[in-house]
Length: 234
Image (cartoon, rainbow, N blue to C red; front, side, top):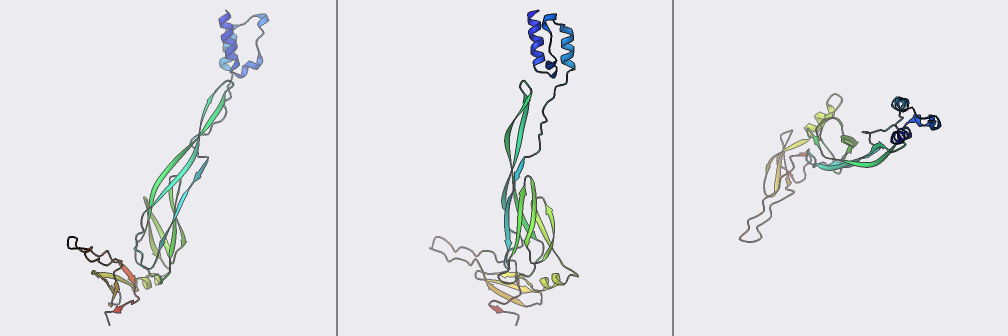
């Protein structure tokens, strides 16, 4: 009987019915005590899980100039979300929470789908951000209006204009690469003329008889129709 009384007292200590008390001077009705303990509601503290307490985003700027390729280099991003993992235990019942960071990693790239005209020294600036697991793009200072289509981690920007006037002008002023040599990049423009520019990565002569020359690097695929050396079409 003594062991039964101890068990009943312990059971009452972790339930809300303990405040009602048991009159031990009049004896203990074990069956009634157990029924009251089972029926008594236990108020557990509310525990929120699966929702981050806060998020630390990661943002990087991507710039385009007049001679930049239409596809930007891929940039690496890392975002952090802070969660709380909570457990209910103890007597009386309580919640103990511990912080848990969760990191998200992604690369992002911007691709402009068609050539457009940028003046010398002009820059277009965009910002890619990773906010938790979500990737987004902000147009900071574009030269034109673009529509944006996201394909996984690539943002494709398409020129948008009223009536197509700006788009047509941009395309008419673009010259496309026709030939690259060790020292020159030769372009053909929309009006049929040709332009040549120095190769930005010319071939390097052989440093010795055992090592051949280092070949020229790639020319820019397009340029603005602005003669810088000689207009071969005249």
